[in-house]
Image (cartoon, rainbow, N blue to C red):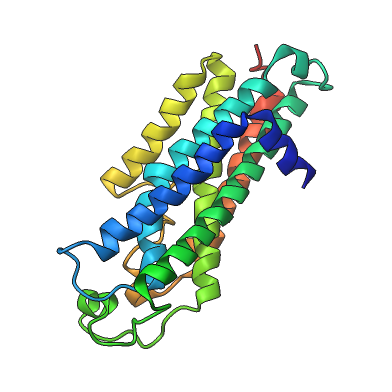
Length: 251
């Protein structure tokens, strides 16, 4: 709780409020455009479909850029010389930046899941209709889905996948900023990496573990949607921390 207070107190209150409003509005807009007011989609949507569509679209288009911009504002404060000299060494500066990134990624992942759950349930009127005819899953697979994933598993996969996408892209941003002393270079590189993976429909930093419509038939595979992203986040944290210890990137 103390870390949350420190994170939000560093930034301007107007910026924090604007971030919450934008994420809320854009997630709801994604559900409306992709599931409610669309002539191209066949079948009636449900809450499960909302989680898939928000993960496929709104997370990398809206949530990641806005959260990274917010974190960049916070990191600018943390990299201030008056703050840095209070740390014991360069490694502690990096670890503090990583902790802030983890806290921000965790908070906004859960918040995005809550907004999706509330908006998706209210807008679609159903939790899961994959076992019914005329559902979105029925038109996509040609048959009703008998083994629907548990809601808790779908929500857990959504939160973990969103968290890892935010954390990995945020770590790329901070690392580039750390090396070059240029804030916007890190931000643009991180956004470019995430955008390339999703537009090209391939990649292992943000696209591979994103919830997709193939879970109509495969379900929420724990290895792909939970274990792999957690391993990726752990490997990212370990690799960057070891690299920082071996070379003084801080300028």
